[in-house]
Image 1 (cartoon, rainbow, N blue to C red):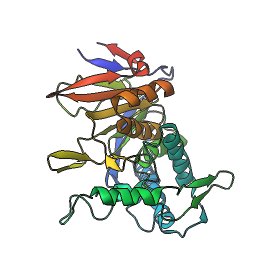
Image 2: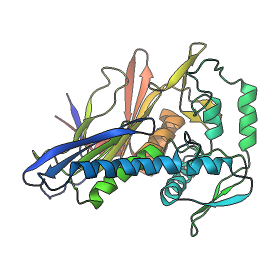
Image 3: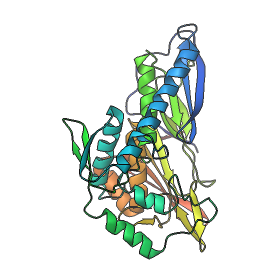
Image 4: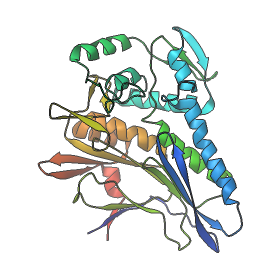
Length: 336
């Protein structure tokens, strides 16, 4: 039996009369992006919307990419010790939110853990999928963690500045992609588009309706067949999934996923296959799906309940999966 997840409220505004779905898309942040909008015929020039959407993502890359050495984030990471830096608006907002999630999750998702991500071969250089890569020894992990101790990035909120204590390597990849999706949504709404589905690298956000009056239905990612399909009506909602089944390498028969626990310096090693979070903002869904993945099924579920997050945990058991749902996620589910 298929299950569907519905938003708490449904807009009374109908889809635009005589609308058709127009598709957009491209590449950014090392992945693909797409957008579908229900537009009245002839109301917009598709080329202008395409260029505007791409510009939003290009701006995210120029500010927050840890792959681009000339990005604002790259310059911050190379900056001298004990220096303050005024950040672009988006960069500051994303960093501020990421630090809040780090605090609320007890450090399970920390934007200041870029040195550990790089050490494990998931950064821009010395990657795990390149020739010559060797997984770090415990001594190397301990040395990087010791170098991070006591080095905190502080924010001057009124002046929108960040403090580089020296040697901190920011990595906003657990938040920036969701923020990019929110930015695509915001751009469309600023242009007067109210009915759309936007996506970047698997993170999605939708609003309004399709021309047939249906919401934008999407199926949740399933790492294994038989997990039980859930279709989500992305009507004022966003969804993000974090898991160990997409980016990982094997070391001595042990799976080493790209999700690093900053508290131990090691890739997560519990039995969680995936965590999905449904939220009004893609940035929040992105960040919390990562934090809950690091925390694991027991502590992650407890935090999801405290934060009233709609979260779905898929736990490996033998050759199958066991599903654990937060109470908020359960309340939004219906069976067909």
